[in-house]
Length: 204
Image (tube, rainbow, N blue to C red; front, side, top):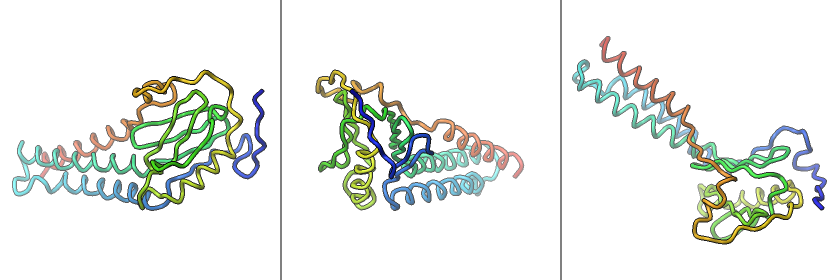
């Protein structure tokens, strides 16, 4: 029988999602790095063509310099937006490259190991967010707090057959995750920088 835990200090049912970030340093580095890189992309797309302000060479320099900075902005944004989000019926974990989604009754336990925070699921899968691993920027203290919040938020897991432990564990747990690309954001920045480079080259 699946018994729901009465949790009032984390988030009641029908409440807004609660987001937990890995401390302050890592999100700060990510967001400030993203903003700085985007500003640099806008500037480079204007000045990279010097001393040849027009022509294909100038356009090539602006495009290469601007788009490289845009890629850094995309990289840092994904780093800074990493988080654990507790919703009414599911938990979402946003890492740099993956988006995990698990039900409230699919979580067996949350533990701390030498590799960081490990979330064990009822089907045998394990989630190990890199943002809670060792190191100053990865917030070794905050993972204790997040572990306790997950333990209090989850329901007693529904019994399911456990997957066999294999070296392809990530592929076995494919139903819980998908690639977190933020492709729309990347495409928007790339298009904006390319348009700026073309306009500057054409009218300089």
